[in-house]
Image (tube, rainbow, N blue to C red; front, side, top):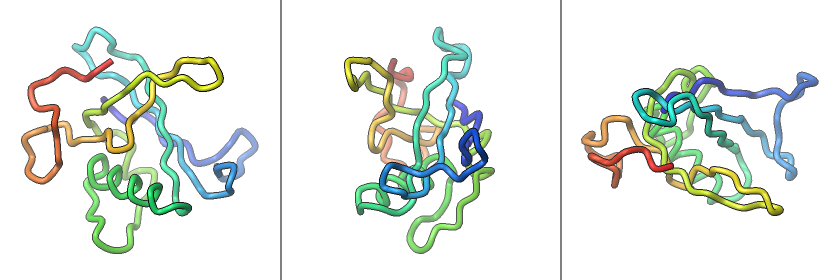
Length: 129
């Protein structure tokens, strides 16, 4: 998959935030060819601050998608994600009776699943849909 867009503002130009007012970005990922689902989009959110679990997921995404070191403070910009390629684990989730594709908590992996230290379980497998 390729990260096509990183949205940081809403339609009125205000910074995106969660309902708890934590800053967030929205990622738009697209399935790469030659996969039969090429061109389909998957949407995800990167949330800054908030609960420890959200900070842990942020560090996973920063290291696995953007290739950033996450052992200290993370300096990240939207351009660090845009255009990056990766493998993504997607599950089908239901919210308010509507089924959606959802990226799992630790669902990002380097595109090259053989890289050391990326924790990949997907080597040799197709992107799950």
